[in-house]
Amino acid sequence: MSNREEGDLVPLKPPVEDADHVNWPLFLTARRLRRWVLVLAARNIPYQVHQSSGGWQIFVPSELQERAIREITLYERENRNWPPEQKPVPLTDNTLITLSILGLLAIFHNLTLLNPESWGLPAVDWLERGCADAGKIMAGEWWRSVTALTLHTDLLHLFSNIAIGSIFVVMLCRVLGSGLGWSLILLTGVIGNFWNAWLQPPDHLAVGASTALFGAVGLLATFNLVHNRTILMKKWPLPLAAALALLAMLGATGDRVDVSAHLWGFASGVIFGAGAGFWIKTKGRPGRLFNALLAAAAAGLVFFAWRRALC
Figure 1: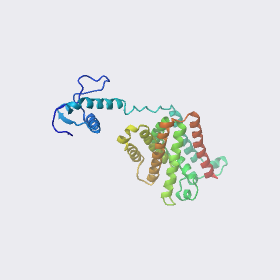
Figure 2: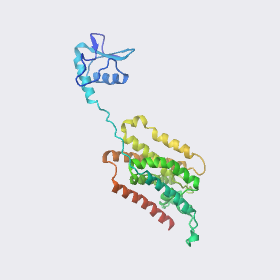
Figure 3: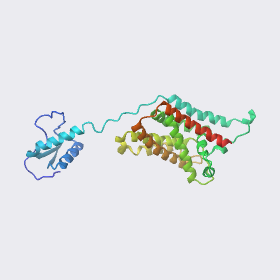
Figure 4: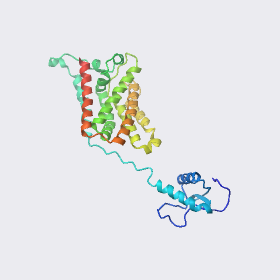
């Protein structure tokens, strides 16, 4: 590799070690070679590259050696600490709170199995009142996109969502905080159910928290990529890989698996996770008060949705 004819060439290396502690190795790695060659080419300094068993060497004209060394030294000084080291996001100690909220799903599921007539209350068909009925959602019953996330067909359905979902939900809430984490999980689940209803035929029915669970996967994956931008180009396939792995664990076929809802939940999580990543990177994580308000808003939305469903 060369941009000069053969002539009086000398190695690109100062006679003594640089005072600013710039590393001048005898042989260059391929990565450093590419960088130094670009610097020389940008400064119109001719050079030749020789390869030996030890590595790569750059040779420059003897009359331009001092200038070439100066340019490389300036480049190394300016880029000494680049890219900057990414500081890890501090984690919140809220695992117990997160697991307790997940436990509320199990408590609510048990309540739906009770017979209210034994208490003198009218019977309630919870699945009929709260399922994600595509036709009814499109007709204006938006609350079904919320209530369907809290319903499960049986204990196996409930346990699979809680057992697998707890991994991602706990991680997400430790990074974002309980209020922001749960409000975004709920939001991605609601949006996923809404878009799924828009795509499905009017008689399509769905229940389960897995749409929000896939939203949590998308949230966590893209948040990490945005917050650590130096790995974005190398690890961009990871969110898709996580979603496919989760889809394999939950199952991609069968009458009770709504793949479309899972994918829409994941897509919603990807979008909102990127937004959350940029927000926290520039503004910082919400404080306790704001997190508490977000948590109250999420709980209030679920309560209001069920109130509408039961009216």
